[in-house]
Image 1 (cartoon, rainbow, N blue to C red):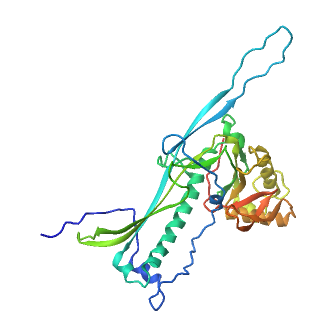
Image 2 (cartoon, rainbow, N blue to C red; image 1 turned 60 degrees about the vertical axis):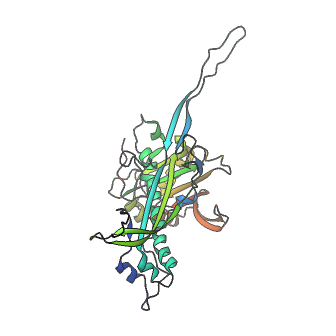
Image 3 (tube, helix red, strand yellow; image 1 turned 135 degrees about the vertical axis):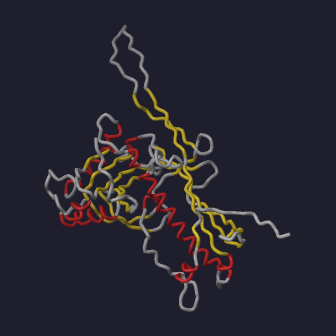
Length: 357
C-alpha cells in the first residue's frame, strides 16, 4: 500500500519557477549574488520609529488622552472656590501581523553549489517586500478596508473639517491638480509610537519551514523548502498633536518651481517652506525633545526633490545637509529643515485623494 503524504497547500506562497532560476544564473550556471533591485525604495521612516510593548492582553495597547483640564479660580478671604475636574478619553489600539512566505523546489535548490545562497536571494526579496508594505501601511492602513491591520497616519489625519479636532493639525497646501501628495511631521514620543505584541521582538521575524511535501496538479508529491516571514506592529497616537500632515501638495507645481513668492499659490514654491515652519509650531513637543523622542518630516522623492530644487532657486538657508550618527551609531548625513531631518519614504503617494473639509 502506497504511503500517505500529508497534503500541504498554501496559496499565498511565492514560488520560484525554472525561469526565475535561469535569470539568477550566469552563463556557467553559477548563482549571481550581485543582483540589482531596480524596484528598491527608500523608506526611512522605519529607522525612526519608537517602539513599546502591548500592555493589554498580548496584542493590544491601552492609553489615556487628556481632553480637558480642571479650572482654576481667583480666591478671596472667607470665600471658597468651586470644585472642578479634568476629563480623559481612553484609547485602545491593536496590532496587525503582516506575513509572507516563499517556497522553492527542494531538488532545484539542492542541485546548486550553494543551496543556502540560492534561498537567500529569494529571502532578500521578501525582506524588501515586507519593508515596502509596512511603510505603506504606516501611512495608508485602513481598518475599514483591512480590519486585521491598523489605521495609518493618512487615515487618521484626513479631514479639514474644523469641527473635527484633528483638523487643527492638517494643513491645506492648496493643490488642485491630479498629482497631490503630503508631508508628515511626526514626533515619535510617548504621544506617538509603534508597539509590538508581548514576547515578540520589534522588526521582521523569520521561521525556516524546512522541507515540506506539496502536491502537483496530478496530486503527485514533491518537496519544497519553505520560508516564513512576519512583522507584527500596531500604531498608537495618544496625543493627536504629535503629528502634522501638510496635505494637497501639488507635485507638478512643486517640481516645476511654480508659485515662488506668490502668496496665492500655497501648493508650491516659497509658501510650502512657510507652511512647514507652521507645522513645527503645531506639533507637540518639537521644542522639548529628549533622548526618547525623534522628530522628522516624511515625504516621497518627488516632494523631496522639489524642496531641494526650491531651496537652490530661492537661495533658502532653511534646508541644509547635516552630518551625524543614525540610531545604530553609524555615521550618516541627511537633509534637514530648520534642524529637523527630511526623510524619504517612497511609499507616500504622489496621487493622493484631495483632503477636504
